[in-house]
Length: 404
Image (cartoon, rainbow, N blue to C red; front, top):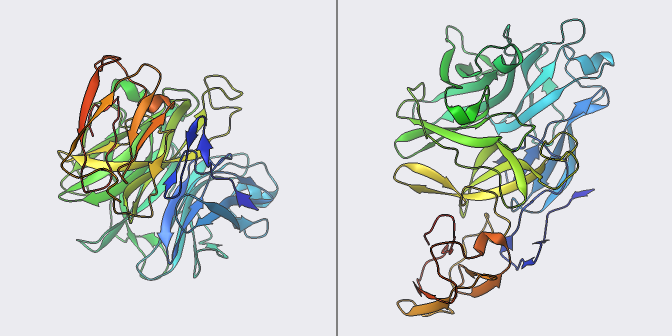
């Protein structure tokens, strides 16, 4: 069974070497994607007594097909409710390759009644497709519950870390992102003698009572901690970022989210960042604003979307700050421009109220009715804008960013 990848959105035609959101048109919340071996793998929230965590694979991060699930009904963790025939929450899996070459899926699961607490677990396999074997007990537990695990390999120090969220908002206490060193030399366990450190907690107005869904990367001289804030079930859910010079902090937060609701998609969040050949790409979920469930995602399927990530002044720019519905260059190919426009020559584009202009990496000027490229205030309809053709790819005229 193939998972559908969108070929067009509205009036936007998508050509070869481009893609359009969503990249997975199905209900795949909390997507965890990674490049392992010779392809990408993606796992997502979902499961019960019949098994857990659907898995997809792709050669280009855009076109996906099913390749099974992490746990079958017979291999569910014995400490989780599903293994006892109970309805059970299996949340937020992430797939990673460990330095040993083994593959690991970190996840959250709920214990059987009467406790019903949420814990962090891990399962490993020799192959990305599995079969996976859980370690037999939770990896992390907390009185306020532990969810949303992610793995980080710090190549500079040689240390590996587990990050997770304390589910404080479910217990009327602050939520926080925690970190602790891992030992994967023989399996996957918490490093002996290591301590738990708090990286961030909910302390900005836009975050509400929640910070969750952490994902950590290193770029240049900084560690960047991406996370989601607010409640996943409403349109205020969005992605934030904090940075630090040391993996354990202190972390400085960006004041505003880097990805928010807009352009027909709401509640973007729970992201990972993949280093694709064409540059960094954020993979995340969002739900169609007009879908059943109104302004909340409950009742609406959370689809998988992707955005190009660029870097300016030491901070990430995620697309234009809202989900992109127009065509984007393929994340898995860095195509060279075909120079249909002469580099160095200045071209004049006429501003319009009804049409936007998309300057593609091949030097093509394409009209689009996608609202991402509709002229906003600052460009007078009927006036002109000068653009200079360049010899390198990746130039977009974007009304929200106001830059190429």
